[in-house]
Image (cartoon, rainbow over all chains, first blue to last red; front, side, top):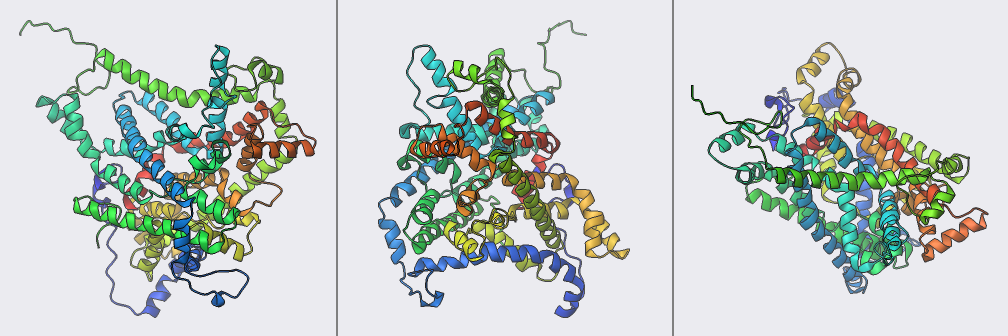
Length: 327
Length: 313
């Protein structure tokens, strides 16, 4: 992975600078020396405590029969009763299934698309063409989901551009942006439009870091275009592929919220419900209660944590770096 | 010398000598693929811009959807947006949220990243762990919602800024930059000359990090500008909503759905016409323009920021 940073000088590339060896000092002496740094870190620490760790601690109400109308300590513990209720909820399984469906779609059809795009882009020799193309394909990444959905409805919706063309030439009205049966395809198209270009940025950097003399050597040994791609290019970007794969697997239950919530009205909840929208509609909009929504969210968080740890472990065993080092 | 005279095929300039020239068909397929992909991105954006400048008659002739070419240019839609009504308020609100939010986020991120870049200081490792652990586990939607409620931020604009003000990923990116791209000798020299941590940060470190600071600021600003979910979750009761929420309501109102009918009725009750396609597209253009203006300045630094984060995170 370290070879990726082609811009940094090689000697400062890898590990952080070793700390200056000082003689052992007492905590008071260190405090006197380091207080400005602690002061600088304080706002961030305070923020994380209030908006990350405090809500994390609130997850305890998933194990309580919680009501905001009585003092906290009077809420009785009920064990895993709320989780049982979540799993028995008839709307939960479809939401989980949809989430997995979208994740698998992402892994199978978005991830390779970005790699293919990066390979195609990498083979463009003219720098001018390349940078123009890059500017165009990165841009939609910065658009909001509201905007993306709006544009899709205007172009592919029932009253949209394409539909009007089809009707103009005597065809039938297009029913694409409100059709639950083709919603998977619609989601994929929206992803491809918004993020496929952005997804290739990291592969492009990895490709740029491959030593060109490897290609030269292979070519003079008679390896053709495809052999070079198979034996040099793909092994060269393998660490990045593994790293991103781990991240993807860790986030398998997180497919976003806005894209589905925005199209829920048009497509219907059966096709669009994912875990995040489920929590939102069941316990913030609906009346399943605080403990119910917290239990559903905690389930998602814990599974995500386990998946990250497991996939990272597998990567280490395969001899890859993964997200964090073994320490 | 040998007299074999091979006429070389015309080679692309800058192609390495060992690389064989691809076949014409191969080139054609690749070019077609790339051109189609770029067109699929550019054409809808173009149609949105063209429609926003269309007059009502032109739109009616086209059946109320998008236009590829505006037949007669009209700025009516933009006049309506900036006439001081609800849309103007919403745009101003979103601009304010973006400015204030980005400033707060950048201040927190810079301070945190600098403190963590000084390895070996007191409590350095626990604080780093505190940040890294946020990558592994998120508190969940409902507990975060409860905390916002408990803090009394529900239906307050602060709830759109404060809960998401720190991007821990950005801290890690910036920290990696401080540690790897700013020579340690420079910081040591400043220390020897008697500069404290604050002076080192403001006089030495920050001036050397302008590019990456610009990228991170853009990431934050785009996040605030595109904010939708937080507004739906934390401020559903406020009169003036961020522009993305307003755009979503306009979209719904013309889709003929139950929620859309409701929104259309609201427009009628206020004595306003339901938004035309031109007005909707003009709002879309308004949400794109700030991004497109910032984009060229910062685009060239993207790769570096993304890679630094991916590797050191």
